Image (tube, rainbow, N blue to C red; front, top):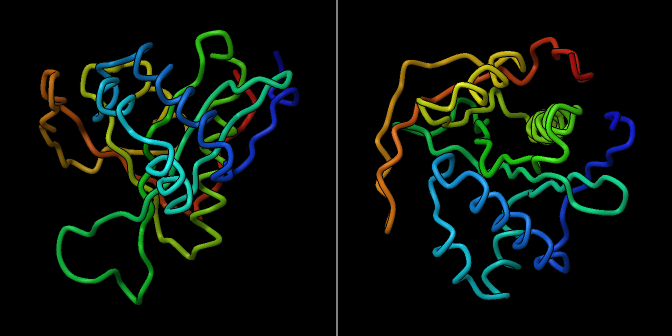
Length: 182
């Protein structure tokens, strides 16, 4: 698979079932990589999924007519005070690429969609949390220009072990790293 065989598109609320199915596949595949749990996400109703998709941008990766990955962006919650000059950072969440599509540039394209969205919103940076023990994800985010901020958190999860995470950030206007797989 080549990155050119992949299309990234912003999900529409009418695609709620596809977003749900990909999200559930992600949680089944890598339960220790996400703050949410499979049981929590599976219990969401159609109106809840539609509301989530309307509330913030979700991007689906499509390959050969089938979903191959997912990412979302949510407004970052500043630690204290209002965002500088009204500009708010965006926070990358729910990043996942199907095992069959890994290593083919899908993740690069999904990150690109979030970065483009954040740039269009005038955001100064994009942040994310990554599990401390997830070496593959940490290396990928570093390759994409993200760097640790020094912030860590232990995120409690209902029905699952707490998630030890480190925050990474990347300026939106920085030079874009290569989007082709290495």
